[in-house]
Figure (cartoon, rainbow, N blue to C red):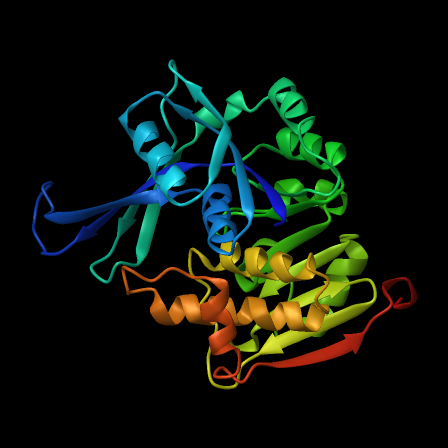
Amino acid sequence: MERFVLIGAMIYDLRAIPYQKSEGMNQPIRLRGQAGGVARNAAEKLAALGHHAILVSACGLDMTGKVLMEDAIAKGIDISYVKQLPSDKTSGLLVLCDEFDQPVSSMLDAGVLNAIDHLYLYTTMQDFTYDDTFIADNNLTVDQLQFIAHQHAQTWLLPVADKSIQPLINILPLFQGVQFNERMLSEDLKLPVDNLHHTIRIMLDQLHLRSLLLIAGENGIYYADSQCIIQAVSPKCKVLDQTSAYEIVLSAFLTKMLQHMPIEKALEYALCALLLENEKKHEKTFVLNEEKIIEKLAAYQIETIKEAVYVSEMY
């Protein structure tokens, strides 16, 4: 069993969805709450895939914090390193949606994460080894992320899908790998997405990335490092870049890569996991696991395309 250390947010997500048009201030809505936070969500996926997923986070000793802690235990997440603070409120995200349940705006209160300071990170990280895989999310500050990457070279950065990665540009080379989506490339980094192979080369060369994962819609998903670019795509299915896509892709990919599966096969496995989650997302009882992913691998007709690339020789 691989051991993963997830550092970042554990948040209570509350979605407000209008169900009836109304004039005035009192808009009839439905409220839907659930456990969230990028690090916490990734921990849930890794635990479901049979791994020891350890969450390093912080929450308040309030009712919301209690709900999140109990939910994490039920999902198989190790919460031994979640810092509970009686003087702070648990992180919360309020998402205002339209009548089709599509986000319009959101408000986040994650101040409790400041409690994950250098001292807490340093003492916590002494309990782990070089063989453990670290994943951090950018609900943390640049300073926190830089400290983590310096302490542990095998750290992957799992950014929040709709949050700018620009403040992190200078520290991206510190991470073992970074995950992106097309919106980050086009809107945040101002890079073209009409030729993703060329854009990936630019990113590897100019941002000095060690490796990256990219969720690319109808183009499937990509893995790239200084030696190669690999694309996994399914002619039958289009990738939906939803809230949970980041956590699923990275969790499934690292699961197989750390088991020494060829990268092409690990990428196929990750794409299958994402497609399966997209397909079953409305089934309340559905839980993603290894057996279900393997059953679906053939059905999705996933293909991989590998291209050699030597970044140092490109320009």
